[in-house]
Length: 354
View (cartoon, rainbow, N blue to C red):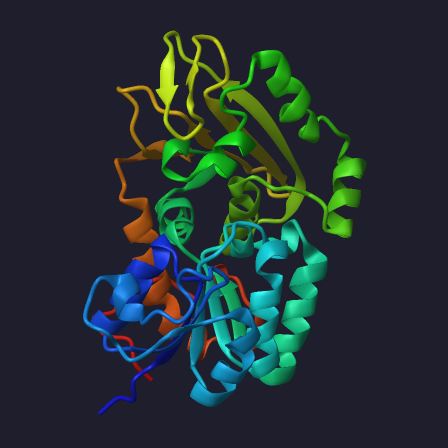
């Protein structure tokens, strides 16, 4: 009989309700959970999941290392923040202890092209302790593998063009404000768009200092180039305000976004490659009007042209299922910081086990 995979859940918010349940349903075992929120520290994870008690209580950051040394997990699932600098401590703790880690952090999907210093530190520590660190989630399939699979059935490619949209109302006020929702167009230009109105040299300097703020697609384009064997020649990012012709009430912002004001933004990342293939990908985050819905659309322009459209994807569930299905791949991967582009195809796992 296969041995159960032991998992520590790092971060017990909305995503963890799914990741923990999916781990149990696929035959794994949650042996520990960590959070910074005093309201959940000390709670049984069953209470967070909405099930019977599991006999595993959430511990604070201060107790995390001792708990992990005692439970000896095979892997940690980190579901907290979106920037690699925000999850560095969590991933470094795992690397130091020789515990594999997989995170939903969007930048962690391919952080070597946006924060090489942190990536290098994590890579070196993980190699020393013989474990693997990676990022996965919705983008592993819907902005990554599906596109590389389409490319596999294409004779010649000139351009890969992608677009994915999401409602900032679903993710809280910090994300909504970061997307410029509720600003006038003049305010948007000053506060949001100006960040990317810089030269290639200035951007590279920020990247090397670990101060660059990539949109989600910045890292996706790097992942796609890795997966497709393309060599990046240049990469740029531009933010564009989104508007609507009518007023839209935003419960997250606590205001009505007037017609013509920014409802959010589109971030467009354009990558030119040595092979002559351009990748242009866009993520659109905005306050939705009643007719809007989440959509994922990718087109390969070449011989032949092909377009893939996925309407109303269940992003949270797809993210969490991708992470849990990836667990055996991470455990079997080489040591270091290894993007999932180098782990082979993500496949459905009826059970996760050694």
